[in-house]
Length: 76
Image 1 (cartoon, rainbow, N blue to C red):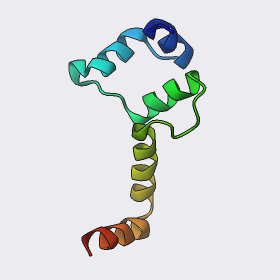
Image 2: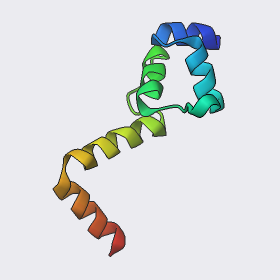
Image 3: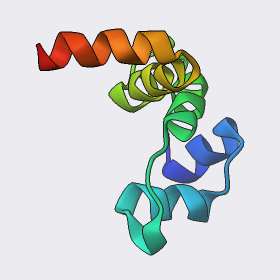
């Protein structure tokens, strides 16, 4: 599948996808963009690490107790 066809199937602009893929114009592959690409490719949810990272960060931001428990477990 071409990048253009993938962008269309994922519902994103081809030029945006191209810039994000190359890191051009301060664009990057966000967790949401990667999730859309994964769905377009019919991959399981969470297939890409960027998507998993986005889910984890959102949960940590939404739950201060989780954030504090995680911090304590990481820092000893």
